[in-house]
Length: 157
Image 1: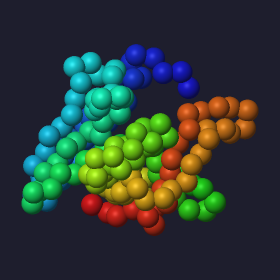
Image 2 (image 1 turned 90 degrees about the horizontal axis):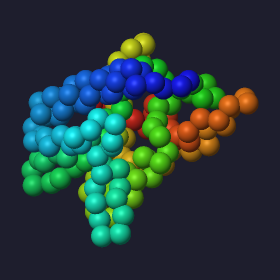
Image 3 (image 1 turned 180 degrees about the vertical axis):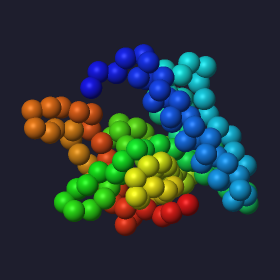
Image 4 (image 1 turned 90 degrees about the vertical axis):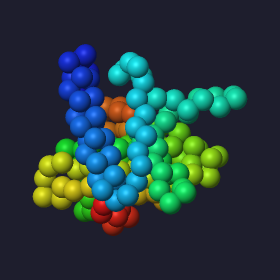
């Protein structure tokens, strides 16, 4: 599906609302929150290093002297794969989040805010947890590659 500017703004708003919901839940659990936003909505926030830039997670959180990253993904549906439910994210972003966690030694959780359907709820997984790579190929179509985790791997927030 072609994404025009209006589609993008709708999806961006949906994502930002999800980030706000998750930030409020984390605050209720005692975290201090630093949300990361760029000045242009079309650009993903970046963490800059000496030799590269890495896609940044949405939230930097502080609790009990520790720093934790949270990346929020708002979802309308689960993926049914071989009879089990999965959820996931863009593979390039997953690679960046994994690299960031490994290089900084800071835990990074991907939070999936499933807002509709019978399995709605807020779930999270450590980005270092093994999942399933999908190359994006499907019946005469090519999508962006994604990385998935099964529902059983997720923890409910």
